Amino acid sequence: MSDKREFELVSSTSAPMTKELAEKFRDMKPSPTERELDPKRVAHLRKKAEQNRLVTFHWAVANIDGEDYRMNGQHSSVMLAELNGDFPDDLYAHVDVYKVSKEIGLPLLFRQFDDRKSSRGPADIAGAYQGLYRELDAVPRKVGAMAIKGIAWHQFTVEGMKDVPKGDDVWTMFDRAKDYTFMHWLGELFSEKTPELKRPEIVAAMYSGWISNEIHTKGFWGLVARGGDHEADHPATRLDEWLIAAKQITDAAKKFRAANYYQACITCYNAFVEDRTITRVNCKTDKGFAQPTE
Image (cartoon, rainbow, N blue to C red; front, top):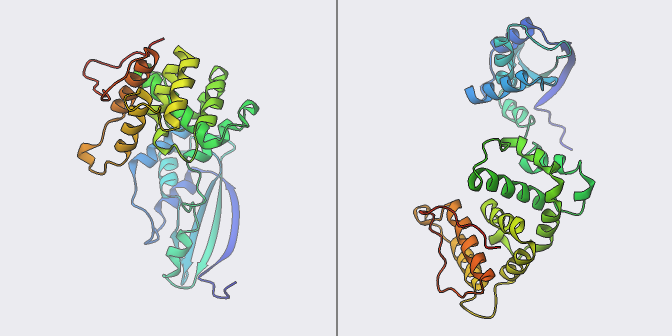
Protein backbone atom coordinates (compact mmCIF):
# COMPACT_ATOMS: atom_id res chain seq x y z
CA MET A 1 0.00 0.00 0.00
CA SER A 2 1.33 3.42 -0.97
CA ASP A 3 2.09 5.92 1.84
CA LYS A 4 1.29 8.81 -0.48
CA ARG A 5 -2.14 10.32 0.23
CA GLU A 6 -3.50 12.66 -2.41
CA PHE A 7 -6.61 13.10 -0.24
CA GLU A 8 -7.83 12.19 3.24
CA LEU A 9 -11.20 12.26 4.97
CA VAL A 10 -11.47 14.94 7.64
CA SER A 11 -15.20 14.78 8.49
CA SER A 12 -18.29 12.73 7.73
CA THR A 13 -21.73 13.91 8.80
CA SER A 14 -25.40 13.23 8.07
CA ALA A 15 -28.14 15.83 8.30
CA PRO A 16 -31.82 16.15 7.36
CA MET A 17 -32.27 17.59 3.89
CA THR A 18 -33.37 21.20 3.93
CA LYS A 19 -33.87 23.88 1.31
CA GLU A 20 -30.91 25.77 2.76
CA LEU A 21 -28.60 22.74 2.57
CA ALA A 22 -29.61 22.00 -1.03
CA GLU A 23 -29.01 25.62 -2.05
CA LYS A 24 -25.68 25.77 -0.20
CA PHE A 25 -24.43 22.73 -2.10
CA ARG A 26 -25.86 23.98 -5.39
CA ASP A 27 -24.07 27.32 -5.01
CA MET A 28 -20.76 25.93 -3.76
CA LYS A 29 -17.70 26.52 -5.93
CA PRO A 30 -17.41 23.48 -8.20
CA SER A 31 -14.30 21.38 -8.52
CA PRO A 32 -12.65 21.83 -11.93
CA THR A 33 -13.20 18.10 -12.37
CA GLU A 34 -16.99 18.41 -12.21
CA ARG A 35 -19.14 17.29 -15.15
CA GLU A 36 -21.16 19.81 -17.11
CA LEU A 37 -24.74 20.19 -15.92
CA ASP A 38 -26.98 17.88 -17.93
CA PRO A 39 -30.69 18.82 -17.86
CA LYS A 40 -31.58 15.19 -18.61
CA ARG A 41 -29.86 14.04 -15.41
CA VAL A 42 -31.74 16.68 -13.43
CA ALA A 43 -35.02 15.58 -15.02
CA HIS A 44 -34.22 11.95 -14.19
CA LEU A 45 -33.73 12.83 -10.53
CA ARG A 46 -36.85 14.99 -10.50
CA LYS A 47 -38.86 12.03 -11.75
CA LYS A 48 -37.50 9.97 -8.86
CA ALA A 49 -38.65 12.70 -6.49
CA GLU A 50 -42.13 12.67 -8.02
CA GLN A 51 -42.25 8.89 -7.57
CA ASN A 52 -41.10 9.15 -3.91
CA ARG A 53 -37.99 7.09 -4.69
CA LEU A 54 -35.31 9.41 -3.34
CA VAL A 55 -32.76 7.97 -0.93
CA THR A 56 -30.02 9.57 1.17
CA PHE A 57 -27.68 11.64 -0.98
CA HIS A 58 -23.96 11.05 -0.56
CA TRP A 59 -22.20 14.32 -1.28
CA ALA A 60 -18.51 15.17 -1.05
CA VAL A 61 -16.48 18.34 -0.56
CA ALA A 62 -12.79 18.81 -1.28
CA ASN A 63 -10.84 21.36 0.73
CA ILE A 64 -7.67 22.79 -0.77
CA ASP A 65 -5.76 25.44 1.17
CA GLY A 66 -8.85 26.30 3.19
CA GLU A 67 -11.25 26.63 0.25
CA ASP A 68 -14.16 24.21 -0.28
CA TYR A 69 -15.03 22.74 -3.67
CA ARG A 70 -18.11 20.66 -4.53
CA MET A 71 -16.88 17.26 -5.71
CA ASN A 72 -20.25 15.78 -6.65
CA GLY A 73 -23.95 16.32 -6.07
CA GLN A 74 -24.35 19.08 -8.67
CA HIS A 75 -27.37 17.53 -10.39
CA SER A 76 -29.07 16.38 -7.19
CA SER A 77 -28.60 19.73 -5.40
CA VAL A 78 -29.94 21.65 -8.42
CA MET A 79 -32.98 19.38 -8.56
CA LEU A 80 -33.60 19.61 -4.81
CA ALA A 81 -33.24 23.38 -4.77
CA GLU A 82 -35.93 23.59 -7.46
CA LEU A 83 -38.30 21.71 -5.15
CA ASN A 84 -38.21 24.67 -2.70
CA GLY A 85 -38.13 22.51 0.41
CA ASP A 86 -40.87 20.13 -0.69
CA PHE A 87 -38.94 17.05 0.51
CA PRO A 88 -40.09 13.85 2.21
CA ASP A 89 -39.60 14.03 6.00
CA ASP A 90 -37.06 11.21 6.03
CA LEU A 91 -34.71 12.59 3.35
CA TYR A 92 -31.09 13.05 4.44
CA ALA A 93 -27.76 14.08 2.99
CA HIS A 94 -24.49 12.48 4.02
CA VAL A 95 -21.60 14.88 3.45
CA ASP A 96 -17.93 13.85 3.46
CA VAL A 97 -15.21 16.49 3.53
CA TYR A 98 -11.78 15.59 2.18
CA LYS A 99 -8.53 17.47 2.51
CA VAL A 100 -6.75 17.43 -0.82
CA SER A 101 -3.02 18.21 -0.83
CA LYS A 102 -2.96 19.76 -4.29
CA GLU A 103 -5.18 20.06 -7.36
CA ILE A 104 -3.74 16.97 -9.03
CA GLY A 105 -5.51 14.98 -6.30
CA LEU A 106 -8.95 16.19 -7.43
CA PRO A 107 -9.30 13.89 -10.48
CA LEU A 108 -8.23 10.94 -8.36
CA LEU A 109 -10.85 11.77 -5.73
CA PHE A 110 -13.44 12.32 -8.47
CA ARG A 111 -12.77 8.82 -9.80
CA GLN A 112 -13.72 7.23 -6.48
CA PHE A 113 -17.38 8.20 -6.80
CA ASP A 114 -19.54 5.90 -8.95
CA ASP A 115 -16.56 4.55 -10.90
CA ARG A 116 -17.52 2.61 -13.99
CA LYS A 117 -16.50 -0.82 -12.72
CA SER A 118 -18.45 -0.42 -9.48
CA SER A 119 -21.57 1.29 -10.82
CA ARG A 120 -24.80 -0.63 -11.24
CA GLY A 121 -25.27 -1.30 -14.92
CA PRO A 122 -28.39 -2.67 -16.65
CA ALA A 123 -27.23 -6.26 -16.12
CA ASP A 124 -26.90 -5.70 -12.36
CA ILE A 125 -30.38 -4.17 -12.12
CA ALA A 126 -31.85 -6.95 -14.26
CA GLY A 127 -30.22 -9.50 -11.96
CA ALA A 128 -31.71 -7.79 -8.90
CA TYR A 129 -35.22 -8.27 -10.30
CA GLN A 130 -34.58 -11.79 -11.57
CA GLY A 131 -33.26 -12.76 -8.13
CA LEU A 132 -36.72 -12.22 -6.65
CA TYR A 133 -38.05 -15.28 -8.49
CA ARG A 134 -36.56 -18.55 -7.30
CA GLU A 135 -38.06 -20.32 -10.30
CA LEU A 136 -35.41 -18.57 -12.40
CA ASP A 137 -32.39 -19.52 -10.29
CA ALA A 138 -31.15 -21.91 -12.99
CA VAL A 139 -31.39 -19.29 -15.74
CA PRO A 140 -28.08 -17.44 -16.25
CA ARG A 141 -28.52 -13.75 -15.46
CA LYS A 142 -27.38 -12.60 -18.92
CA VAL A 143 -29.86 -14.97 -20.55
CA GLY A 144 -32.66 -13.74 -18.32
CA ALA A 145 -31.94 -10.13 -19.25
CA MET A 146 -31.83 -10.99 -22.96
CA ALA A 147 -35.13 -12.85 -22.67
CA ILE A 148 -36.84 -9.82 -21.14
CA LYS A 149 -35.38 -7.51 -23.79
CA GLY A 150 -36.67 -9.81 -26.51
CA ILE A 151 -40.14 -10.15 -25.02
CA ALA A 152 -40.38 -6.39 -24.54
CA TRP A 153 -39.22 -5.78 -28.12
CA HIS A 154 -41.88 -8.20 -29.38
CA GLN A 155 -44.63 -6.57 -27.38
CA PHE A 156 -43.73 -3.01 -28.39
CA THR A 157 -42.57 -3.46 -32.00
CA VAL A 158 -44.53 -6.46 -33.24
CA GLU A 159 -47.68 -6.36 -31.14
CA GLY A 160 -47.77 -2.57 -30.99
CA MET A 161 -48.41 -2.42 -27.25
CA LYS A 162 -47.97 1.10 -25.86
CA ASP A 163 -47.66 0.31 -22.15
CA VAL A 164 -44.50 -1.81 -22.32
CA PRO A 165 -42.17 -0.83 -19.44
CA LYS A 166 -39.09 1.12 -20.53
CA GLY A 167 -35.64 1.76 -19.12
CA ASP A 168 -34.88 -0.06 -15.89
CA ASP A 169 -38.62 -0.61 -15.36
CA VAL A 170 -38.53 -3.23 -18.12
CA TRP A 171 -37.06 -5.69 -15.60
CA THR A 172 -40.34 -5.74 -13.69
CA MET A 173 -41.43 -8.10 -16.48
CA PHE A 174 -39.58 -10.88 -14.67
CA ASP A 175 -42.85 -11.40 -12.76
CA ARG A 176 -44.42 -12.97 -15.88
CA ALA A 177 -44.51 -16.60 -14.73
CA LYS A 178 -45.98 -17.72 -18.06
CA ASP A 179 -42.65 -16.91 -19.73
CA TYR A 180 -40.43 -18.89 -17.35
CA THR A 181 -40.36 -22.03 -19.52
CA PHE A 182 -39.24 -19.87 -22.45
CA MET A 183 -36.43 -18.39 -20.35
CA HIS A 184 -35.27 -21.82 -19.20
CA TRP A 185 -35.24 -23.08 -22.79
CA LEU A 186 -33.30 -20.02 -23.90
CA GLY A 187 -30.72 -20.78 -21.20
CA GLU A 188 -30.28 -24.24 -22.70
CA LEU A 189 -30.10 -22.92 -26.27
CA PHE A 190 -27.53 -20.17 -25.79
CA SER A 191 -23.86 -20.96 -25.50
CA GLU A 192 -20.51 -19.33 -26.18
CA LYS A 193 -20.78 -20.74 -29.70
CA THR A 194 -23.97 -18.81 -30.51
CA PRO A 195 -23.08 -15.09 -30.19
CA GLU A 196 -24.96 -14.29 -33.40
CA LEU A 197 -28.25 -15.25 -31.72
CA LYS A 198 -27.95 -12.85 -28.79
CA ARG A 199 -29.92 -9.88 -30.05
CA PRO A 200 -33.29 -8.72 -28.64
CA GLU A 201 -35.03 -8.83 -32.02
CA ILE A 202 -33.79 -12.40 -32.64
CA VAL A 203 -35.01 -13.46 -29.21
CA ALA A 204 -38.28 -11.71 -30.07
CA ALA A 205 -38.57 -13.94 -33.15
CA MET A 206 -37.92 -17.00 -30.98
CA TYR A 207 -40.60 -15.80 -28.57
CA SER A 208 -43.05 -15.20 -31.41
CA GLY A 209 -42.57 -18.77 -32.57
CA TRP A 210 -42.69 -20.05 -28.98
CA ILE A 211 -46.13 -18.64 -28.23
CA SER A 212 -47.28 -20.07 -31.57
CA ASN A 213 -45.78 -23.57 -31.34
CA GLU A 214 -43.14 -24.57 -28.79
CA ILE A 215 -42.26 -27.85 -30.54
CA HIS A 216 -41.55 -26.22 -33.89
CA THR A 217 -39.59 -23.45 -32.17
CA LYS A 218 -37.37 -25.87 -30.29
CA GLY A 219 -36.75 -27.90 -33.43
CA PHE A 220 -35.90 -24.98 -35.69
CA TRP A 221 -33.74 -22.96 -33.31
CA GLY A 222 -31.97 -26.06 -32.08
CA LEU A 223 -30.79 -26.59 -35.66
CA VAL A 224 -29.81 -22.94 -36.11
CA ALA A 225 -27.76 -23.03 -32.90
CA ARG A 226 -25.89 -26.08 -34.18
CA GLY A 227 -25.05 -24.43 -37.51
CA GLY A 228 -28.05 -25.56 -39.51
CA ASP A 229 -28.92 -28.78 -41.30
CA HIS A 230 -26.66 -30.77 -43.65
CA GLU A 231 -28.69 -29.47 -46.61
CA ALA A 232 -27.46 -26.13 -48.00
CA ASP A 233 -30.97 -24.89 -48.79
CA HIS A 234 -32.44 -25.86 -45.44
CA PRO A 235 -33.95 -22.74 -43.78
CA ALA A 236 -31.97 -23.30 -40.56
CA THR A 237 -28.74 -23.50 -42.56
CA ARG A 238 -29.58 -20.40 -44.57
CA LEU A 239 -30.50 -18.41 -41.47
CA ASP A 240 -27.36 -19.44 -39.60
CA GLU A 241 -25.20 -18.35 -42.53
CA TRP A 242 -27.15 -15.09 -42.89
CA LEU A 243 -26.83 -14.21 -39.18
CA ILE A 244 -23.11 -14.92 -39.12
CA ALA A 245 -22.57 -12.84 -42.26
CA ALA A 246 -24.70 -10.00 -40.87
CA LYS A 247 -22.67 -9.93 -37.66
CA GLN A 248 -19.48 -9.44 -39.67
CA ILE A 249 -20.71 -6.34 -41.53
CA THR A 250 -18.66 -3.35 -40.38
CA ASP A 251 -19.99 -0.66 -42.71
CA ALA A 252 -22.73 1.14 -40.75
CA ALA A 253 -24.56 2.01 -43.96
CA LYS A 254 -24.84 -1.66 -44.88
CA LYS A 255 -25.90 -2.99 -41.49
CA PHE A 256 -29.37 -4.47 -41.18
CA ARG A 257 -31.99 -2.88 -38.95
CA ALA A 258 -33.43 -4.72 -35.98
CA ALA A 259 -36.66 -5.25 -37.92
CA ASN A 260 -34.71 -6.98 -40.72
CA TYR A 261 -33.26 -9.47 -38.24
CA TYR A 262 -36.70 -10.27 -36.88
CA GLN A 263 -38.20 -10.68 -40.36
CA ALA A 264 -35.36 -12.91 -41.53
CA CYS A 265 -35.84 -15.19 -38.54
CA ILE A 266 -39.61 -15.48 -38.95
CA THR A 267 -39.51 -16.13 -42.70
CA CYS A 268 -36.93 -18.88 -42.25
CA TYR A 269 -38.87 -20.33 -39.34
CA ASN A 270 -42.00 -20.44 -41.48
CA ALA A 271 -40.15 -22.23 -44.27
CA PHE A 272 -39.02 -24.81 -41.72
CA VAL A 273 -42.55 -25.38 -40.40
CA GLU A 274 -43.90 -25.62 -43.95
CA ASP A 275 -41.08 -28.01 -44.94
CA ARG A 276 -39.75 -25.72 -47.67
CA THR A 277 -36.19 -25.14 -48.82
CA ILE A 278 -35.02 -21.60 -49.57
CA THR A 279 -32.25 -20.19 -51.72
CA ARG A 280 -32.09 -16.77 -50.06
CA VAL A 281 -33.20 -15.15 -46.81
CA ASN A 282 -36.00 -12.61 -47.08
CA CYS A 283 -35.61 -9.83 -44.51
CA LYS A 284 -37.70 -7.08 -46.14
CA THR A 285 -40.40 -5.47 -43.99
CA ASP A 286 -42.11 -3.24 -46.58
CA LYS A 287 -45.29 -5.33 -46.27
CA GLY A 288 -45.14 -5.57 -42.50
CA PHE A 289 -43.94 -8.37 -40.25
CA ALA A 290 -44.56 -11.97 -41.22
CA GLN A 291 -46.61 -14.01 -38.76
CA PRO A 292 -45.22 -17.33 -37.51
CA THR A 293 -46.76 -20.41 -39.09
CA GLU A 294 -48.44 -22.63 -36.54
